[in-house]
Length: 234
Image 1 (tube, rainbow, N blue to C red):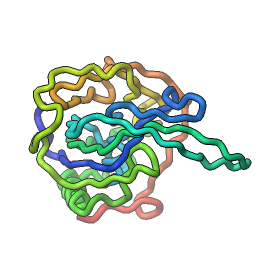
Image 2 (image 1 turned 30 degrees about the horizontal axis):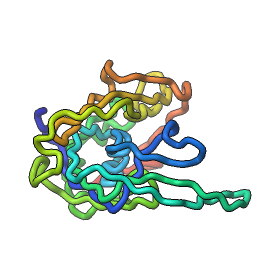
Image 3 (image 1 turned 60 degrees about the vertical axis):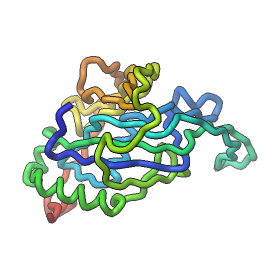
């Protein structure tokens, strides 16, 4: 895969991670996928730097550490009282390398004035060097992580020369109302394969993804420069 000129590459690490979705939360308990989902990595990249002018695409992720899990007994907060105990299965000692780039959101013509690739790329790189603009969470609020710049593919990974590993049927991500012409909220699923520790993601609009409409015709927020939106300064 050819690296995009507006790409960023970063390391992502944390003591714990919990990448789950509805089907892995049976009976109020949570069980993490073996690897981060596309949507989780997109959200983490948006925490580094994001504007509604563009959207991030995750190109690939490299799993650096051995995949291992740890179960914990958690008492979830219940607004109506109670003292339930749930078991959450976390990923332990996670470390990834991520390569991502941004694309202009062509459905946001109201923000066309803000499309300056060099400006946004430089801001993204500076934000990454500072550890991101917002806190980094790996799937759950209790799983705080950290990011820092890196060269994708550098260093030794546990799954180097491991070969192929099928990861089964997984949640891929969402297509939000401001990213598609129908203004629907769409969920997507796929069957990823990890090769020597690297997962190369399909494009968000790839025909290979299984798509389901979650909600139809959602309203899209309008942005007006100078009223509720300001142009990023380089």
